[in-house]
Length: 212
Image 1 (cartoon, helix red, strand yellow):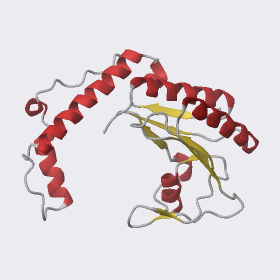
Image 2 (image 1 turned 135 degrees about the horizontal axis):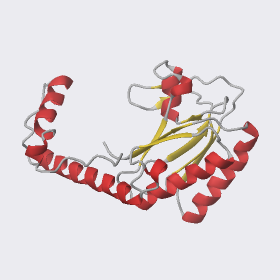
Image 3 (image 1 turned 90 degrees about the horizontal axis):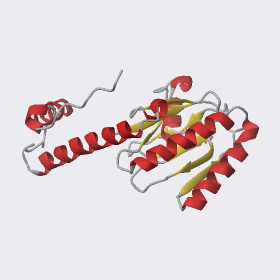
């Protein structure tokens, strides 16, 4: 739950990757943002998989960089497989085990818990990368900012969801959820739905629809 940016695309040429990585690394360095690079051997077939504890094992076969523009945001992942498609380590592992289809897989970044400025900055960077490196880049922005540039609606979306999350957190900590020991996943989901998803019980207004 929370405002996220979903994106996918293929770099225009593998020869552009060093330049993309260098530019993004320079930006991260100048802003003091953490970054991680990968430079796997594309000549080796990837065989990564998700272990039962959630760790990724094996060879990912990814090159590129990821940066974290805010301590409370997820990273912006700009890793590429040997065919040039943007992949996160998790999506790569899920593609390899057949859970995701390669050409329809999205990479996601949640910005909900960061400042709106972080969301705006990430969208600006993605627009730049689309012009310079990834001309077929597709972006699905849950706040609508990618399409509209409407910062007010972005701030309203993030504030609304923060309010919801705060109320859900308060309900959980109040103990009203009861003892979940021994319940199945479906039973837990049903109890959470009963407790949380009633707007009248939550005491909040329904989220306003976007202008058409």
